[in-house]
Amino acid sequence: MQYILNHYSAVFIFLAVVSGIVSAAEKDLKVPSCRVVPLPGHRTAFLYQGKEVAVWHYGSQYPRPFFYPLRSVKGTRLTRMGHPGAPDHDHHRSVWFAHHKVGGVDFWSDLGAGKVKQKQWLAYEDGEDEAVMAVLLGWFDGQDQLLMEQEVVAAWRPGNGLGHELELQLTFRPVAERLELEKTNFGFLAVRMAKYLSGHFGTGQLSDSERRKGEKAIFSKSARWVDYSGPTPAVPDGREGIAYFDHPENPNYPSHWHVREDGWMGSGFCLKKAHTLKRESPLVLRYLLLAHSGNAGHPQLEGVAKDFIARPGFSVSKSTRPHRQFEVRRK
Image (cartoon, rainbow, N blue to C red; front, side, top):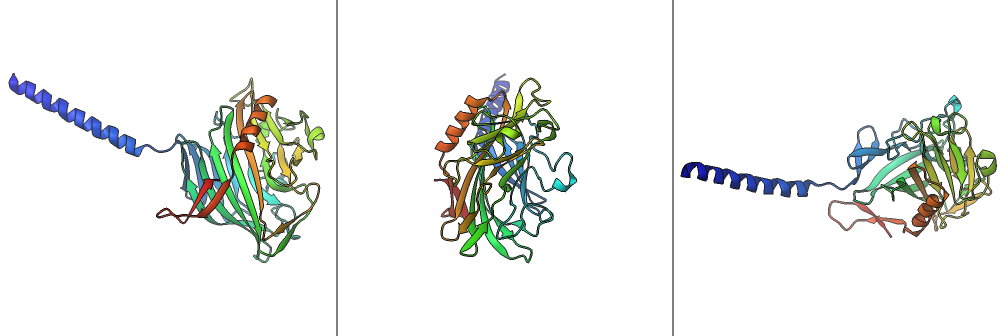
């Protein structure tokens, strides 16, 4: 009997010790909720609690990088690749950066001479509140000459309950002392909505911060934000979509908007006038894309705008930490 008791005591102690080791190991192995993960095929994924929520594509087979998909809390793909009915609009790749005329070079159409290439990634930062990616892009003309560099900081956040957030900070530095951004409806940040969220091909609706609705009412008008949303298979009795926010620190705020009922929207940075980039004072633009799911209305979106305005921007610098060349932090 004593042997049996000793045996079970030993087993109990062994299990307790192992349990303690496992608990410590699990604690050591715990990963942040928000992560940036490089993938094969020139892609970088944003993960939330292990699930893919957005992917950055920068392969050389494309004339410029883009994000696809951008998912809602329900997992709905809110954007699409290309126009639902126009093959000559294949340059509409979900969420992307472009401009119709930079120093006379077309960086908008796939037929244009300009190409935007990722030169290198700078930093990936995981965290509980947000995952942040910093990359450096180059804008090259038809002779493969570099016209300007674009630093992109993309911060994916789970949001405040309305939906996921993709915050973008774009810094443009021309190679020459001056570089002309010509007047155009097109550029810099463009969004092509999923087919079922477009006004023409689906049941989506455009609205803005000034309580206007529809393409005719919003096109070319000034607004602090624009929303494109409607019912989806995941939320048939509510709304899912993307709210696109301008920032007061941006020149020309509040932006004039280029929107279409066929399912696209973009802040028209040069819609009303041209802009000259200067090497000694880089252009910094901040935007927020809210991938919302539910019944977000004007008051809720105003709250998101207020929170976005209050958040500091980012700085990218040489790192002082071991095994890192650069780091990205909130200012």
